[in-house]
Image 1 (cartoon, rainbow, N blue to C red):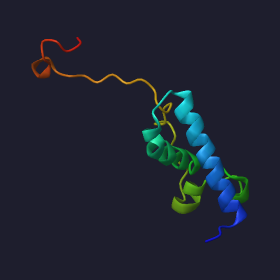
Image 2 (tube, helix red, strand yellow; image 1 turned 135 degrees about the horizontal axis):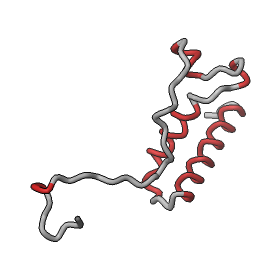
Image 3 (tube, rainbow, N blue to C red; image 1 turned 120 degrees about the vertical axis):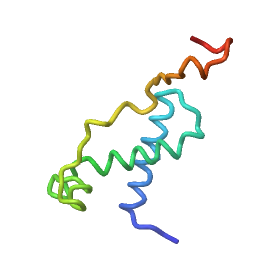
Image 4 (cartoon, helix red, strand yellow; image 1 turned 180 degrees about the horizontal axis):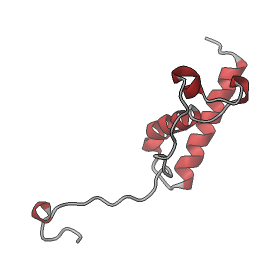
Length: 92
């Protein structure tokens, strides 16, 4: 089935951004699905010229999207494990 040119270009752009994110953060390729979801999520929160400089999310909900919760993809995280759940040879 043949897609239109705009959709093919959008898919190509998403794929290129996903590859860039994975390589930039030295992540394994099995993270491609999470990276793709992230790209589309962020894209829907960005203003678009065809929508009169509003966002796709704003067109759908009528509210400006909040972006304060966004973080760098692949950033380091630290997980707290309570002392009673740690084994003797686990890292401190």
